Length: 530
Image (cartoon, rainbow, N blue to C red; front, side):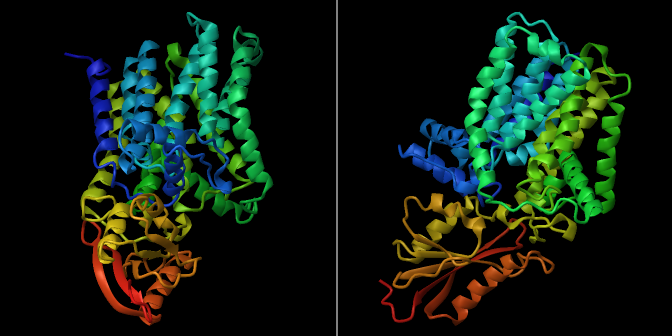
C-alpha cells in the first residue's frame, strides 16, 4: 500500500485544488469592484498602450497587469484568461512549495501543505478573481520561506545561487503588496532570535542577494511612499475603542485561518457565533499543539515559519495603521489573511511529520470543507448583502454574487443593454462602484457608462438602460447606508425623472432564486430615442 505521504496523495490533492480554481472561472465569483482597475490596465498593455494604476493604487508595481496581458496573448482577452493568472500561478507556487518539502525529506508535510493551501477557501476564492494579486502573495509567502531556510540554514550545492533566488522570491512579493515586508521581517526575527543574523549577513552570496533584491524593491517602495505622502487615504485613530478593535482584528485573522471570514465575505454563509468560536479554538489549539515535541530534523524551518506567523499577525496592524483602518473592520479586510495563512499552513504541515497522518488529514479536511461550502453556495445558494462592517453583522457582499445564467455578469449586462437599445450603444446607468468591470466588458459595445452615484446622467443619449439592485439584495440592517441609498435614488430617478417608455427588460436572480438585479430601459422625455 502506498504511504499517505506518497506522490499519489500529493498529485490527487493538487488536481482537486486545480478543479476548485478553474471550473466556471469566468463567472464565479462575479467580477466586481477593483477588478476593473487591473483589467483596464492589462487591456491597455494588451493593446500596446502605456498603462498605469489609479493614483491611490500605486503602492504596487504594474507586474500583475503585465501578467494578465501576457495571459490574454496566450489565450483570449476575457475574465477567464485574466483570472487564470492568480488561479494557475498560485497553484504552481503551492506545488513547488510542496515539492520543496519533499526534497527536504518531509513527505507527509508536503501533501498536508498542498492540501491545506490548495483547498483552503481563502486560497481558492482569492485566486478566482483579480481584485488583488494576493493569491500569488500567498504562494510566494510559503515558497520564499522554504527558499530562505534552504539557502541559509542548510548546505545547498550552489549557495550563492540559492541565496540570490531566495532574495528574489522575497522581493517579488513587493510587486503584489507592500505587506511583503512582513516575510522579510519574519526572516530577520528568526535570524536574530537564533543568534544567526551575523552569520547570515556574512554568508557567501548574501550581499549579492540583498543588492539584487533592493533593485527590485526600490521602485515599488518609492511609489508606495508617494501614495502615503499624498495622504490619499485617511489613517484611523489608533487607540479609539481599543478593546473592541483588538477583538475585531483577532477575529478577522483567525477567520482567515479557519476560512470563516472568507466565507462571510463571499457567501454570507459563515458559521453561527458558537461555531465560529469553536473553529477559531480549533485553529489556536492546533497551533499550540505544533510546538509540542517539534520534529528535530525540521526544527529550524518550523521556527522560521513561526517567526513569519508572529510577524504577520503583529506586523500587519503596524503596516496598515498609517494608511488603513488597522483593526480590519470591513468584511473584505480578510483579504490580508495571506500574511498569516502561508506560515500557518507550513506550521500545520511540519507538525504532521511528528504527529501522524490523521493530523494531516484533519488539517486538509478542515481546509476543504470551507471551499466545498463555498462551491455549494455558488452552485445553488443565495443571500442578501448584510453590510460592510464585521462588527455590525456584515457579510455576503453583493459584489461577488452570481446569477442563474451561466454567464459572466458584466458581459451579460453589456449584452442586455445592447439588445434593449436595438443592437446599438446605449447609456448604461449604474449607482455602485461594484460595477466597475463593466468598463472592460464594454470594450466592444461602446455604451456610455454612467455611475449616477457621482456622475450626472447625460442628455440626448437615445436608449438608457438602468441597472438596479433588486429589493431584498440589501439586508435591512445594511451599513453604511450610503450604498443602498444610492440605489434607491437611482430607482426614484427612473420612476419620477424625465423618462418615458419605461420597461423592465431583464430580471436576474441568484442561483436559489433570491433577488439580484433588474434592468430597465427608457428614453428621455423630449428625445427621439434615436
